[in-house]
Image 1: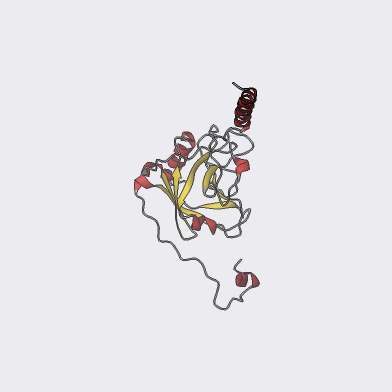
Image 2: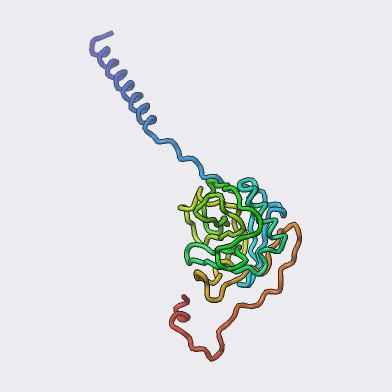
Length: 223
């Protein structure tokens, strides 16, 4: 082989080796893909569907997650079938955050006669429509109270037990009266499990202001 051809071959080989090394290094620098956020179980059997008939005008349908929080789901189903939630108010409702109910005294300080539950925290996120159990500062203190998120609140993830999510009727959750406590609290008229085939009550139409009531600036702005 002539000298200049040999030198050219060496240069080409060197460049190819450098390209291979650079490509390998670049491949090693690519960070691994983040772990996927766990999704809710897909099963929606009637036995695991909770209906909440609200005084705001309609039925809210909630898919329960027994695979994620079996004890908490069983508690909700037991209390619903006992009629425990019928007539209970939403005693703590924070705009842009959540609506909380499940205390028969309407104070947020009480629960059911059943014992408190062991926490069943998971990685399921608190999204709009997520249903999660309320508790005190003690992790194992959930009993009967639960809340429905108006908006995502990821700071609650793995700190409160997620037990389900609204499938339909979120519009009736959105208009729950706000307040801590509200002046005229909205109520759970009836709670039932879908497999029991309990018909919804006769809902009253939303209360309208008197005909001679003055129109406020808030009403004009739609707020």
